[in-house]
Length: 95
Image (tube, rainbow, N blue to C red; front, side):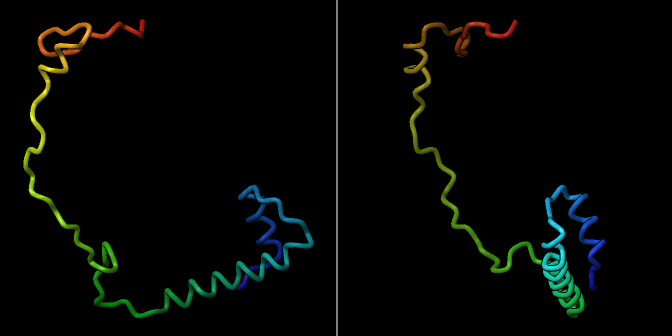
């Protein structure tokens, strides 16, 4: 798909890109090359190919789901300035 100079100027305006009149031919050529590459990719036969979530089917090693730390809640609440029913009390900051 070949773009025309006026198309690139309009695209640049819509995208809020500052492209000078001298730059438009080069930008037109680069965009046309990109669009040709996309057309080649779309022409590739993909019938019967399932979409992939990840190209290498990477699998993460999982660790056992076990508790590794002791419960220190009472120790921490003992030194807190204000606690009620197991909750920390803090000053109200929003009116």
